[in-house]
Amino acid sequence: MNLFPTEEPDYTLLDRSSAEYRKAHTENKFIRMKESKKDEDPLSKALMGATHISDSVKMRYVYLSSVFLEDMKVNIFRNQFELHENYPDVSADEWNDFLNDRIVSTYLSRHKRTLLKSAAEDNLANPLAKNKRDNLKLIENIEQQERQEAQKNIVIMRIPDIYGDIDEENTWE
Image (cartoon, rainbow, N blue to C red):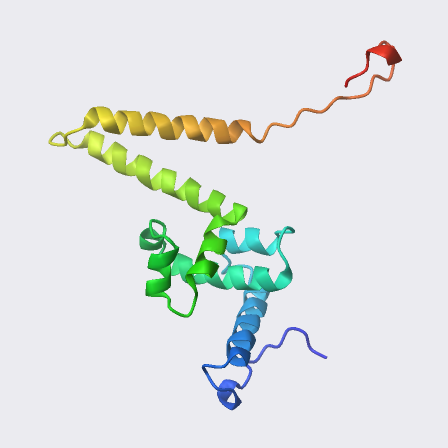
């Protein structure tokens, strides 16, 4: 039994509007994405390595990420209802679950901050631009958020005392 088919399955036997067709197409797309690591985007890689979601949800999220990233500059500022209008085969609830997943929301917030910071810096460079003070505050807030995010990754570990300098009564609580 070949778990990773190299040929495209024959979908002509299935009705295109059926759930079986969509499921088979999504599963095949997931398998092809898993096999071709070089074409994989960072969001799909992170989603495929996620342990907090089931495999079926993971496949769906990888598909949604590929759809989302086709036009990321526009989609990054859309909400679930606008995404549903542009991609009617995906419900607004599915888009909401996708956008609120911790991996996806972290990825998108990082890119939103980058886009907003570059737009504010471009506006500062423009001699005819107004509201330069607001742009400076925006850049400062974004940099503060980036520093806070970087500090979240610090792990503090207590190394056991191998020489016995600490008595057992004064241990960590």
